[in-house]
Length: 106
Image (cartoon, rainbow, N blue to C red; front, top):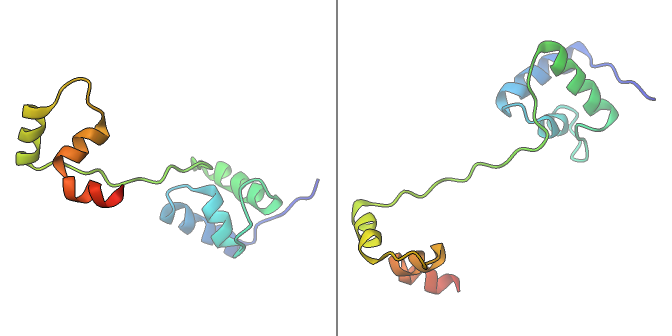
């Protein structure tokens, strides 16, 4: 099995990337080695993962992208409370609230 040893510069860069990318191993490997095909399971990616484990870092390989949550305004909440019934789907509620936007989306 091939082994790769991180250089001092790569180790320093990996610590910064860990902080910047919130422990996303795959993205850190791509940026650190400047290769879009790099990931945590390649030889260099495993070396990076080993270094992070030695440092006590908790890395992640599957990162769920955070989506922004939409918060309803007070008048929208009141509307939902008045018109909601248990059989309604989320889409139907959205169509009631935002008829213009949902009509454009199809």
